[in-house]
Amino acid sequence: MNRDLQQPARAPDTITSDAWQSLRAATSARIALGRAGGSLPTHEWLKFKAAHAAARDAVHNEFHAADLARELHDLGLKSIVVESAAVDRMTYLQRPDLGRRLSDASRKQLEAFDHSGAAPDVAIIVSDGLSALAVHRQAPPLLSALAPRLSERQVSLSPVVVARFGRVALEDEIGQLLRARLAVILIGERPGLGSPDSLGAYLVHGPKAGNADARRNCVSNIRPEGLPIEAAAETLVYLITESLRRQISGVELKDDRMVPSPPNPAALPSRE
Image (cartoon, rainbow, N blue to C red; front, side, top):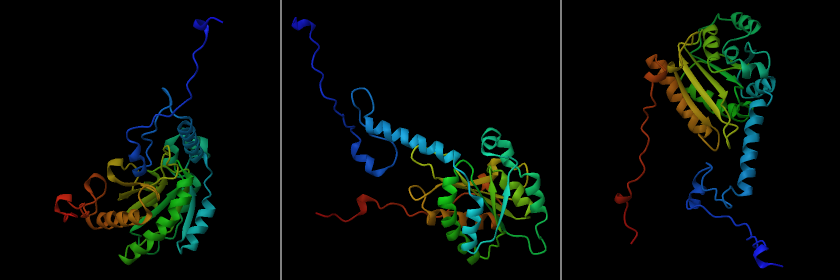
């Protein structure tokens, strides 16, 4: 056989490591993946596809509002289950506007709520948003940490409103109907690759229909791998109490707590 016609022997596939490989232990971000030839290594490609599938599943997961209400009851929190004007999951995804207002039946339910006592300081709403998984995982422990802290500061709460198919602005109508001074909605955030269970918290002072997003404060990425539950509760307590005290929210309200600065390496004693 003519040696010129022979195919060269194919070298075995090898993975070329990335120069940033050592930084992977410091973050869950998809960095320093390496390469196999001109492509991603197979195991990294499969991990990417799995993360993408988990994000899609999170968007379409069913929200078990009644189960969540029972969990809240076990925490000593009263609750009311309502629905937005979106009749099902597909409608919710295609019509964001319907997720921003209550169904007629739920509006009448809150209008008939007993308002004989003093108006609450805060109305807390919990909704599936774009990740029911996030709500079922993060909302109960967050409320378990948040409610006692608010009670210690004599901040009164309405019953927690569990809302199916809600968007952030649904807090305005609910807070207004409950005559609350401030509304907070805990809602499943849009899933990212590697973060299908991230919870967001949005608060607004003076909830009413037509509020602009500039009047809201957001605490995002609440999950063990992001902002831990205890830290999220402390942040929300600070923002809520400051909002009530100063009667502001949104761009006017900042988290001005003093955060300890990392030590200056030059000021540390030498180990030599």
